[in-house]
Every structure is written in structure tokens, then in C-alpha cells.
Image (cartoon, rainbow, N blue to C red; front, side):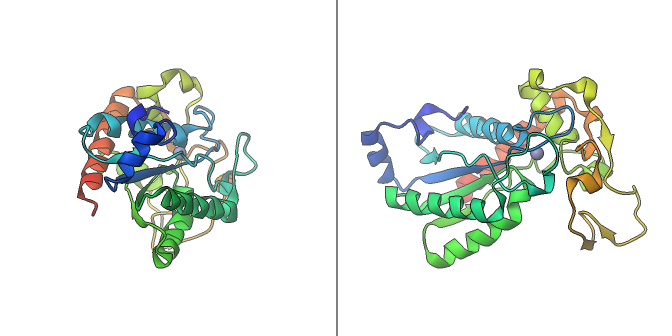
Length: 252
Ligand SMILES: [Zn+2]
């Protein structure tokens, strides 16, 4: 994990941790997935991206800013990718139980403010629902962080249909762990027609339908991974980190 030692809850000496509780710190809870990312990216892509963002956040924070990183939940809800090799999915109920137990025990440690840093879209509906339930229970004060670079300049079709292992994610890994990318296998798979004439689409349409990755892309890629470059990745990581720092600093 690239998060700085002095912000990593797993590595803080007990006395230091006790002193930090007094500052009412914000706890970042990383959540990701282990699942296929096309023929060219590793199954830990979402977890790697969370780690890369956390590293950038730690470098961008001033030492006195009270922000700590919780042990990551890096196996998530990925059953939409089952059938492809390399998937480790908890499913919805197990992810919910893990999430709720983690929050309860962070509260028992004395922490009161938690922000979720999630890099896997498949976790989002489940975590969003759980956030509201935990809010009603009053376990901790919960926030949701937007982990995407807000201004990518991606082509419109990639923005609509580049859901997974496409230009965005591939560029981020090319910028940081190029040896993990098999670019000779990178491909382009669109999940629907460029200008759909029906309202029902997998995503980004007024009417969407339930889908399995297999229905959308034979290779598992959703988007155009062949357009990825390290230079774009560096720019988008920087944009995402600045966006996250702004959100972290404006949370109550
Ligand atoms: Zn991903």
C-alpha cells in the first residue's frame, strides 16, 4: 500500500493512534475489487487505482491535516464478472456484512468520521444503500468521495461506454505500473451502438437493463484500451487527486 506510514492505521504505534483519535480525524476507507480487466490489465486494477490515489492524497496533504487510511476492503461485489478467470467476489451480502462490521469497529476505536474511497462501480449501489442505513443507525458520520478525474477530455463515446478496462483505467496503470499492462493484447470493445436508436442500454441511458460482462464484451474490455497512454494517465491521476483533496478538505 502506497499510503504514507504516518497515515496508515495498520502501522500507527498505539500511543500515536490514541493521540490522533483526539483530533477527530477523517478516516478514508478504500473499497475496490478483484476481477477481470480485459486481456491486458491485472485483476487487481481497481485496488491498484485506489492505492495510487491514496498515495497522491498522502503526498498532497499538509502534515497537520487529520486524515488517516483504514485497512482496505479490496475484495468487493463483482458477480457481474463471474465466469471470467481471476474474479474474487464477496457478493452483495458479504460485502455489506464486512462494511458494516468495519464501520462498527472503527467507531469502537474512537473514530467518528469516515469517507468511502471506492474505485469499483459494481460496489456503488450496494455501498450507497448501506451508507444511508448506517447513517440512520448513527454508527459514524459517512461521506462518499468521487474518485474520478472530473475533466478527462475523453471522447464522448468513451465517456458513455468506457465502463471498464478502457482508455481511462488503462492509462492510469500505464502511468504507474506499465509492467503490469500487456498492451499488445489491449483491445476495443463497445457495449452498444455509437448512436443508439433505442432507449434501453446497459448504462448511460434513460432506461437501463441488468447486464453481465459477458453480454457486453467477449474480451471483458468495455471501451477503447488501445487509445491509452501514460501521459493521459499521469494527467488524470493528478486531476483525480486534486479533486479528492478538495472534497476531503470541504467535508464537515
Ligand atoms: Zn476497474
